[in-house]
Structures are given as C-alpha cells and as structure tokens.
Length: 304
Image: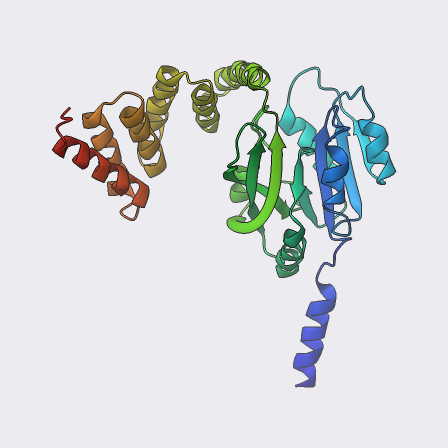
C-alpha cells in the first residue's frame, strides 16, 4: 500500500501545474482596444504571454508589454498566419499551448476546465467552443476551434490564412477532443470591411491551392468565403470539387446537398447528396432531416 501511495504521490508531483505549464501564444496587429480584455481573461491561468506583432502602429505593443508579455516583431510582408503562429509557438516554454486572438476572451468558468485537461496529460488537441458575436446580430454563431494542445515540435499550424493545427496533431499521433470550454469572439459588424477581407482571403487561398493542389482543406475554406459573400454558384462549384476529391466524406456530401437544396432548389440532386451522406454515416440526423423536408415539399406539390 505504501508503494502504491508513493507511486500515486510521484505521479501527482510529476503532473504539470498551472500557470507554469501553460503558454499563451497570440498574433496581433493594432489591437489596443481589444487586447486588455483578452489578456485579463487569462490572468492567473498562465505566466507566459508570447505575442507576435505583425506591424502595429498603435499602443498594442506597449499594452502587451505592460502585462509582462514577450512581444516579438514579425515581418508580415508575405501574408502567412501559420508562420506567425508557429513563430510564437517556437518560443513557448510551457508544456501546453493556449491560442487566442486579440478579439477573443476566455469565459471565466473555462479556466478551471483547462487546468483539469492539462492535468490529464493526454496527447490531444482540444476544440474550444467559440461564440462569435456581432453588433448587428443578437444571436451569436457557435463554432469549434482547436486552441489548446501540447507543446511539441511537430505540432505546427498550416495555411497562410484560415491556418489550422488539427492535421498536424493527428499526423503526430495525437487525438482531437471537443470540449465545452468557451471563448467569446467579438468581430467587426462593418459589412464592407468583412467583404474586403473575404476577397483578400479568396485570393490567398487560390494561391495556396495553385501551389499545393493536394491540400483539399483549402477548398473547404474557399467555399466558406464564397458563401459569406453570397456567391453561391462559386461555392457550389467548390463544394462539388470537394466531393470529387473526398467521395467517402459524409460531411462533404451533406454540405453539397444543402447548397443544392437551398440555393439551387434542385431537389433531385439534393436528395442524392443527402442519401449518400446517410449511406456513409447512417447516424447523420441533419441529412435525414433535410430528406424529410424534401419529401414534405414534394407532397405539397413542389415536385422537382
């Protein structure tokens, strides 16, 4: 029993402890209005703030320094968000990495949850629940992003825009888990500014696709950018290309079905898409729900 107790005590003592176990890594530019709220949200959770600055001309660097951050300038002449994030990660000393953007804040109840995950010591990346708030909408849109992961030299971001670390973690033998750890994201409600960013990202994504046609993850983001611009014909063309490249991807067939149903009103093709999604993933409730909608429309006399 004493031996077992000793082993348990050794295991407990060897576990990483906050805040030394966690490094916050960020990239910023002209974020003097948002940065204090972001950094305040992680006070006590981490003792290391690494902030890569891509060319701020306001008080961003001084604010970051006032929080004790390691402020690192980064040449962003060639737009590459993955390179900037990886530069931050490469300087981190913590055993775990937490990534936030300046216009995001960690919800107060989420901090102890992060501590518990770190204590588990799994080789895993964790999806955080991001609530996207806009001043022109009362209802936030929720998505999930991998923002907590072990600090390992082979875990690095990929993609000049819409950079992701998911595939790197999986290829490195890690797993991905979804959590209810919440971050709140307040983004610009300036429609014209968002559309300029959409067009900017589209051009960069096209460059990435031309440089590496094998990276089909870029196509998912390209379809999303076209969708946000309400360029649905272009989005459908990309969605069809994704299905050809990933014929066994149920999610790809599902999204193509949504496009065919909602933006083309092509019930025949939409039905085929949803049926294929269900064939690949029999427990796909969203696909089944849309098939039910199609059947109801046909019964109402809206035959294809």
